[in-house]
Amino acid sequence: IDCTRTPLLLPPESMEVENKTKVSDADRASAELLKNKGNDFFKKGDYEEAINYYTKAIGLNPNDASYYCNRAACYMKLKKYFLALLDILTEKRFLQFQSMLEDSDTAIKLDEKYSKAYRRKAQAYIGIGNLYVHLNFLSFFVILFYQLAKITYEKAITAVPNDKDIAKDYKNAKQVDN
Image (cartoon, rainbow, N blue to C red):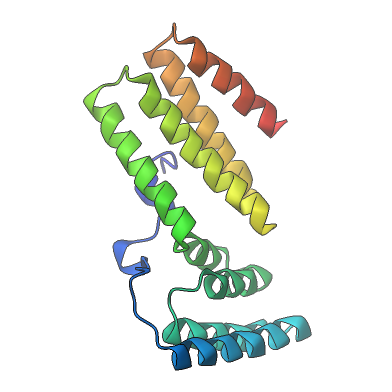
């Protein structure tokens, strides 16, 4: 499996959440109540029941990233890592990085010596890793995305060996992992 290919790391289009969904104030309030009940079950260690409440909250208000992140935390506790990853990747900030990765890949395909495209791709991977750090879990994925950034810089160095900025960025990316 080539885990450096973007599509393997991102949810299918059907999993994407559009932030344009209109939510009534009543549904927003009901969703918050459901989230709070989910939080109560999470604190008690009843992660399956917490998942049920977070899922109901998402059904009422699919625009709130915290519902997905909370449900992902339950999946992590239950060692359902793939489901956790999908919930995190549907969060809006990750979808922005997905677009950044796709655009960078397209630019690299059009011009393999375009160093800025490699830099943007690596920065997207680092950004995803930093979001995982900020969320304070999924450390395996933090390491994975930092590794993907380093691989991208290595490809850039091969494609554009005299680019001093790429070499500097690669050196910084290697230090993050140490």
